[in-house]
Length: 121
Image: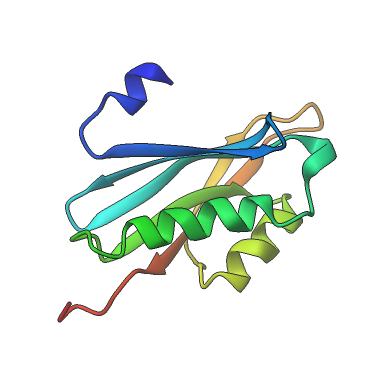
C-alpha cells in the first residue's frame, strides 16, 4: 500500500471509530478518470455508513480535479456493495468474467462508473 500511495495521483483515507481503524479507501486519479483501487470495512462495522462516507469523501476530493469519471470493480455476488454503489450513482459499464476466485468457483467483476462532473466543467 505504501508503494501505491506514493504514486502520483493516489490518495486514501482511514475511517476510525473512537481510535480504532475500521475502514479505508485508496483511489488513483489520472487524467480524465479516477479509480477506487480498494475499499474495505471491518465486518463488525459494516452497514453503519462507513463505506458510504469513504466513497463520498473520494467523490468530494475529486470535485476540483480534472477527472470526469470515477471507476471501481465489484464482485458480481457482492450485492450489498452493488446496492450501495447504485445509490451513489454508479452504473455497470463492463463485466470481467471469472475475475474473483472463490472457494465455490470464480465470480465475475462488474466494472462500475460514475460521472463526476459534466464535460464543460
